[in-house]
Image (spheres, rainbow, N blue to C red):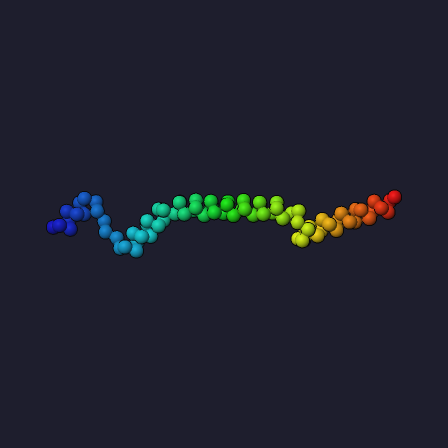
Amino acid sequence: MSNQSSMSRGEIYIPNNEFNHIVQMASDQPIIQNQLDLFNEKREMHLVSQKAVKNWGNTLKGQRKKRLLSIEEKQKLAEV
């Protein structure tokens, strides 16, 4: 009799693992937003790092830039 009265109130019973899965799925939005925030933060830090490194002479870009400048200087000297 008590089982019938509880069912009439619209109550359902589910196992804990299913309940935990439902709760996790319902709370995925904050997790996704947190991951997006972390991704954007890492991307911004990467861009700042690239800006700082682009003028260094001991990187591939820096060595390439030096080489191009020296070629340009040689060409200018050859013209004169």
